[in-house]
Amino acid sequence: MLDDIDGHVTAAPGLLLTVTVADCVPCYLAHPGTGTLGLLHAGWRGTAKGILEKGVDALATRASCSRYEILIHFGISICGSCYEVGSEVAREVRGAEPEGATHLDLRGELALRARALGIRQISMSTWCTAHDGRRFHSHRRDGSRAGRGIAYLGRPRGLEG
Image 1: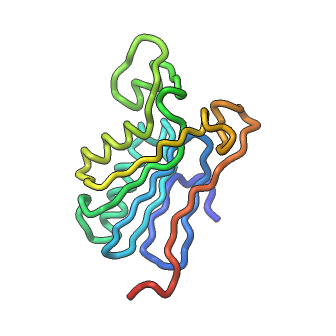
Image 2 (image 1 turned 180 degrees about the vertical axis):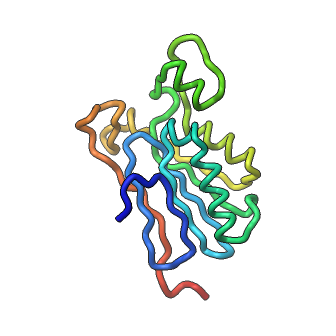
């Protein structure tokens, strides 16, 4: 097990990639032609530091493919209407500093970044960890006592050919 890792990329079958999430966005990446997969944990800090761009580059390199061949799904996370952040967070993520608090749609921001990278096939969950609380853990809603969800992605051995 690897601690403190925000992303994984593999072309090996039989591995199950996992990240834990409570409000952050699990980003599922795949190149169908080679079976290369990636799974990223994208909170506001990781998004600001380019976790998506680094993950896409790592997957494209591993799969020897163009970015436009990669599929991305942005999973269950906090929605923009529930995720109020300070101006300093908005500045880090968006490069702009609004006055006072604002709402941040991380999935939307990540989708914009994916399109800018040339990704053509993007899907996105509509579930919100905060207002769909009966189903999901939310650090924003429940604080430090919140549980965690596990995002996972893999492909079984024996489907290589």
